Length: 358
Image (cartoon, rainbow, N blue to C red):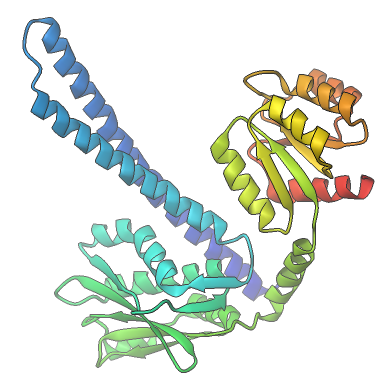
């Protein structure tokens, strides 16, 4: 790995760390409010045991506040999911307005600490480009950090997304604190590494009080990304047909979406009984089976599947595996284990091996 690659990797790790800390802090604050609100509700109910009538309006108001905090927590989780999915592919089409809004949301905690408001003004029509979403988020985050420290008296940083002759642009405006001296120091070496990878550029304009990130409409990956892109193209050629069996619907939905993005034909079910019916009616290259099921243990499902289709390849998902259960699963015909939380690269490789065996 070159020095530049090391720098890009370090920037990415620092960005992910910063965002994770910010989101965890937001979630912790939300949970604290929810906990105290639940405690107050319990106090209200306790008072009724002592003959004091329940104040219905106060109870309703508290319920509304709880719902507001639940929505706040849900927003945190959605942002974290969007960030996580930004590394699914090294190059893909994105809506620049949506990415700018996400980065502004992820940077909101830092902005609040400095008393700054972030405002995203998307274009009238969607601005879509092909780029590396994770590296772009890294770059925009660094630009926002710089903008927050050079903001003007109104303490508002405005992000304006627009089409440009070269592709697209994001303007960070209202930076009255952007002097000629500061402008000469930005972009730094860190932003420069990201700009090179994204084939983008930054223009600073102290007189206008703004910095502009100019992005190409169609991304041409740098040499270090071409290998990653090619590997993902190879993955995209996979056309395995698989069945996911897990009692957690949210897990199924996310896992199915990620595997489908890699070109796989994915069916899902939360019911072992329905799974057995599907296996009777359809052929699958692999079964990905949760070890802990509510109706019957994964080993029982494994045994029943193998009785119906001995040739089928089964990958067991578990967070509870022991040596004994592992050996028993192998004796019953399981191809292998994958531990939860799932490493998608590991699971994908095992599915590819299963496909070759069928």
